[in-house]
Image 1 (spheres, rainbow, N blue to C red):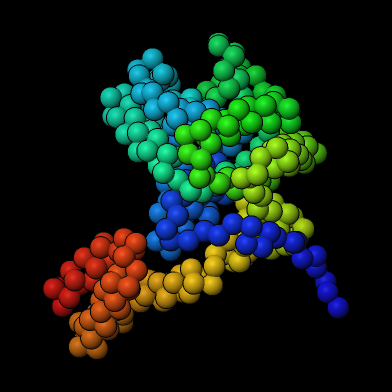
Image 2: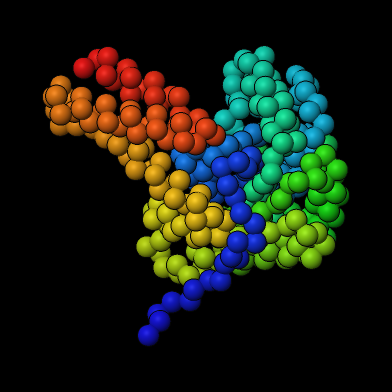
Length: 329
């Protein structure tokens, strides 16, 4: 007897390996997957504008990366003694406007180069609801806790999303013909929109991606939303707020993602590295013991072996950490 629905996932439509360069943009779910990729030592550029939720803000950020046009002081707002950018997450905000601009533009130019070299672009749409600044009508990526009266809230349509992204995909292909785009819809439930409105929002995102897949042959879809809502349909798979996926859910989605996009060889490399990473993070009961020193020596040897075997691994920080531990013993 089978007491749950297993969601079909794409099998090896594309393969992600350690030679690939990845960019991830979108909701905080993109960081859940992105952090796993970083931990496994893939080449990843993650959310260069911070967490973004709606398709038009994500599209706007990619366009800025294509143009690499610097932000200036006129692009900042001052609210509650802090400088913000409506295009960026609050993690870029600060009390010094020059530092804010330096951080924003440094990150912009790094990601602009990454976009031209990337082989995989992973986009996570979170919501179809947008907030437009009443002053100029522009859609903002983050409201930065300004008064609600500052913005108009609306749900964008499938046609609006498809139209803006169709043009963007064509422009991306001109700059980077090799890029492949994987879309996901975030399983995070936006219940502040209301249960029914949240469903309409997610459906709008899914229909948009489906239409883009029909128009372009380098577009793929990973069903993260369906896995959580259909395969894991139980509140034990959610965090205490009942809207965000629990850590065990992220583990499961990562496992599914790995099965979809990693070859057997890549999966074996990941397994080797995770064993070593676990040893590096080990906290001994007796850090001053001879056995712990031997453990560090053995771990350091394994790290150097994997570095020699896989030259694409950037693990110099781990080597430095282990060597410092040895010096202190």
